[in-house]
Amino acid sequence: MEEVRPNAIYTTNEAQQMLRVSNSTIKRLLKKGLIRANKVGGQYRILGKEILRLVSPELEKEMVKSYMKVKGKVVRKINKW
Image 1 (cartoon, one colour):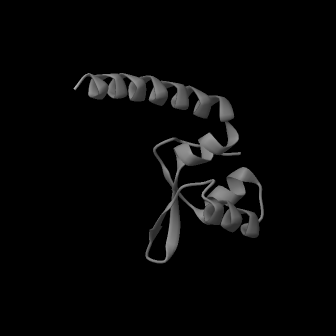
Image 2: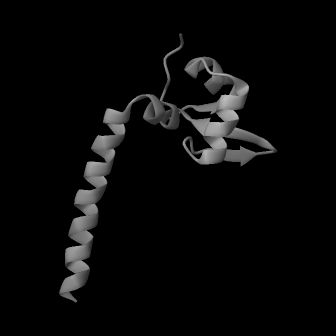
């Protein structure tokens, strides 16, 4: 299996092969918003970090924790106004 590079851009077929899921599963993940992607010329393009996020919930938990920390600082600053 090929290593997923976070900043690489993948097609739905490439993502499907990496995740070892069916075409209908990829479509369902995109439709439900579980994988974020951009549509280019009628085809989806998926960033590698989205694939990694999907298979690595620990990574997402760390990102959410960092985001909430920054958000808390911003909210406290705004509330001082």
